[in-house]
Length: 174
Image (cartoon, rainbow, N blue to C red):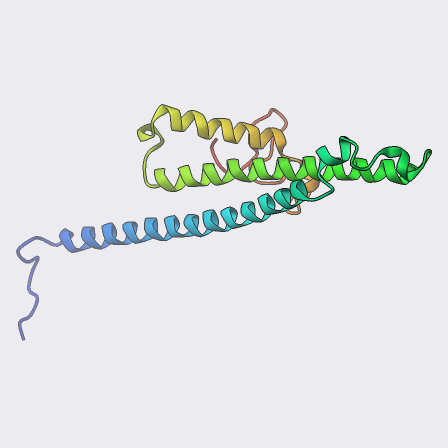
């Protein structure tokens, strides 16, 4: 067997540099794969929410059918607060499902952009993509409700939640 007696033909740093490069590439690929899994999970969840909206809109309880006289208010009797409460509950559920669907669509779009731009410096991303990401982040901050966040211990404690001066308290840089 031949003994290793020196730096060899390419020097000592080539193999170390190559190993570091391979390690960095593997780390980047693992992070991109994790983003892809989260992206796919969000897409599946949005399909579920959209399916609920579609079912609600195609059912006899659809808002337009109810409001256009399919079930006139007088049929249930007058002075019937439970009927009014039912109509209010329906409208609330429908509006919240629509907000959830829009929020999920924005988050899916943002995650898709993040996957496509992974590994690039923010300066290498085109201006339209930057503007869209910033718009999505702004809307997410505006619609964030700490009281609905199971991970927020107190106001301003959740990742990217609006801080006292409107900026993110921790998490991303957007």
